Length: 114
Length: 111
Image (cartoon, rainbow over the protein chains, first blue to last red):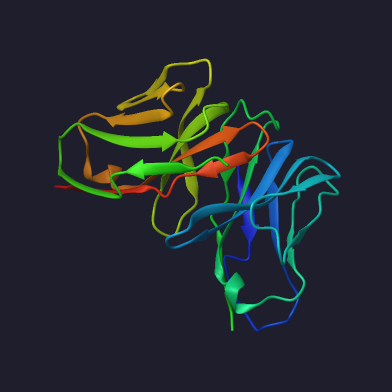
């Protein structure tokens, strides 16, 4: 089954403790991206990647890192999480960066930073 | 900078009604526009994608139109069903700005 898989689904952590949220897709998509969704602010893009070893900042990249060493994986790293990073995070992928095909989303990771 | 708005913010209708959801964007230099559905606690599911050169797309009871020059898109849902209850989001892919999402319209279809 074609899908975007995020892990974990729920994560509670403390301020400053490094964490990684994994994202993997099995559709051989070139384009992958990360979003956070907050009440009243909607979905905002954190980082995106047009292909392997190519990453770019979205609208809200501060406090986050990403890497794209393989086509299928696009992990989101929070080196020193803070409470304002408490949010619902989504990973998404598409065939190419010109986006002539739909975005496929994972089921989300709900992160709480205390 | 691209901004996307959606009207109404919430909508409640009886089953069987036809309804229209609206999406507006400020920068007409878009590659495409997508409509998504989001169920509570779940990810987004793509419903329709309209390329910038197209005027509309249809899938089953859903029809989406695009008027790029006026910065507007509508999602038409025919013969609504309780299973259509969800939040509907539109997103535009803009040259040099990537994806920008609207805040969504929360739809409730009452049996």
